[in-house]
Length: 227
Image (cartoon, rainbow, N blue to C red; front, side):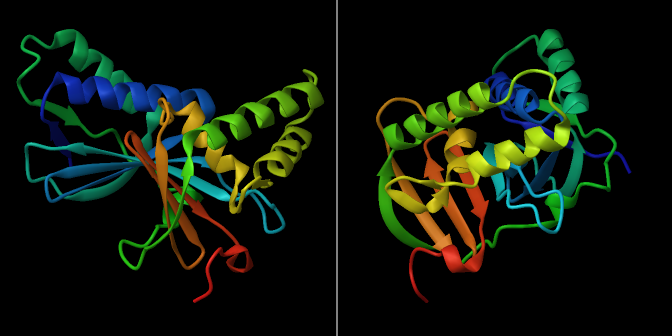
């Protein structure tokens, strides 16, 4: 069955296009689209474990967009296919203030991370952290990986090194892995000085910023607060 969603205007289309473009430079894979109640939630995976003993945390990014229609669906589609559709719609747009209907690409059904869904409720607040801390952590980790990994290494070695760096706790916020900082920085969520709200429920931590959310699924014994 053919599905569509209707963004409120060209500004929303540009915002979605920018978000997916940044995502594709990290992981040119898939995006999960959940439409309902006039909102499109877009989830992408920045990091996720690829095996039973992989220490890489699951790090998801979430952006939401207002819809002008009443669409309702939950699908996973290729990022590149959706970007191609957005680029064509942008080129054909005549009036930037009018709603824009976007066709949903053909679904993919083999994306393991998309079956891991953060809970909708039960979140409680933790102490806020400053955006500068995440920026420093991300930049330090990127430089460490760049120095440690010369070109030409095998994929397994590269993944292992990245897992070691990005699963490491953030100094001063040890309940959050450094991969969350990398995700926030690389996706453009860190803009200027901002106090970032932190929430937790079970093994999940959420970092909420003005431009989006980072969701981390961690091992239960790394929880910051006791139940």
